[in-house]
Image (cartoon, one colour):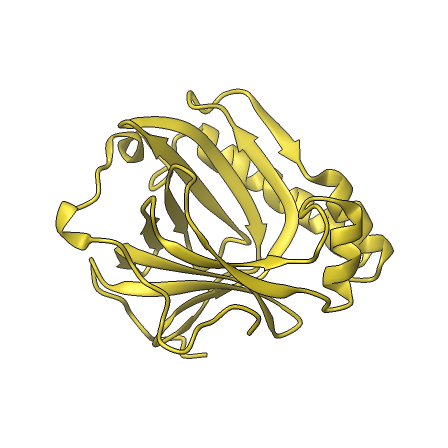
Length: 210
């Protein structure tokens, strides 16, 4: 990892999610901003991605157990979800994900994860299973995938103390986001990507079943 790597606006990088050193997802992304206090990336619809497959429903408790055992393969898919902005900061144990479609915010989403680390190729994260879904007006919110985190504790991926800290990290995120504290303010709801950026691609050598 290279802590002092900085990315340029419009640069194509990858966001890699890992568990115990093994890649769970590889998402080509475009840098929107990379400043000392904030990093933001963009995933347009149509982007090719590598996503883990365990052979069972990806959000089932059995899938968590298979991940704990390192039992998954990577399969190439095309990003069909709404365009995604990912915003994080060095000290945060979470990222704010903004899904937009037809120039409208579909949802705000808090992804609990380790603070990002950097390589020349892009950003590395480690997902914590627990998430938060926030309505477009940033007021109502709810926990998501609490059962998956409980299963991750049961199979030994995390301790109960770590799980409690993840929940506290989530509450801290909600306090920042719902207060409109920059950079988590409404300006992102109107943000539009540069049409010259194109569609980011998987890096050379990335393949299914890696």
